[in-house]
Image (cartoon, rainbow, N blue to C red; front, top):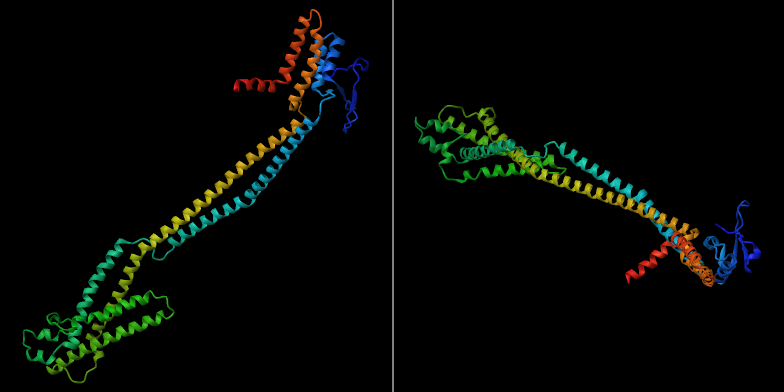
Length: 422
């Protein structure tokens, strides 16, 4: 409330009209510059210390209508500058955080989302690649058992076959056996493919199978070759093995024909390729040797599946780890963005509070208290000299107490708290 005081009743004052741009309809307020202590004493004397007038003057002082002429405004300007500095710093901090937030929302988060999608796509590609492998990645125990069984039996057969075949082709003494032949062993003499006598003699024919096993292993190596001449290598090896088997079959058939000629069972004119025995030796030797090499290759592939499965498990595990890391990074960016938004909101609230405080009455509570105390001191000086002033004093004190509780409560609480802290 602003008390309209007639100019003739006030002490000499200096009026400053507000020159700020205001609407023409707004009332023009005047600042009354006085010595507040003297003004309080004068007004108390003029009104006989009327409590109503006291309340009116207190409101005028609070509203800035009555100002102490001797009071410097440097303190208020300093406070205003401090508030502006704080506001500028907060706005700068807010703008920086907004820039960081924009970077996270438009760069970091989309980039992290792309990495998550890329990692998920990579994992899917690995799983599809694993599922579409021609031979699979899991070892088939039944296949492996069958391969080993057939491989073992084939190895024994080939070894025995080549021991017998080499003995019949190169180590058989036809003349000596014919001389000792009789009705009881004549059948063994004509048995030229599987010769039991080959296993009863100690000679180099026991080592002969090593040659064919060596070529079979080399053939297996050629199967897995990635060289451009792979086909040429395989054909060359097959021709070598075929040539060796043809020579063995020829000499076996030749020795058998000689026995028949010496016994008068065949003529000297002879064509080896007309004999079924020749092709039987080729089948048992050459084709079985190729089969042995293929089975060896199948065993290796089946066992390699275990290693391949481990490789795919490791690749899948690494891809899942990559996804997890990308998702964690994405979540960290999102959490950081949320935290930044909260910080920005708090900064904006603080900026609004500081801006409002520039026009807030309670922003200059200490200055207001100083002004009120100076005015009230002059008022009470006059009141003390009045006779029978007890009732009037109490009424004025009640007005002052009400005013302090209503407008100076925050600094009153602080002043009361300081002694208790000490």
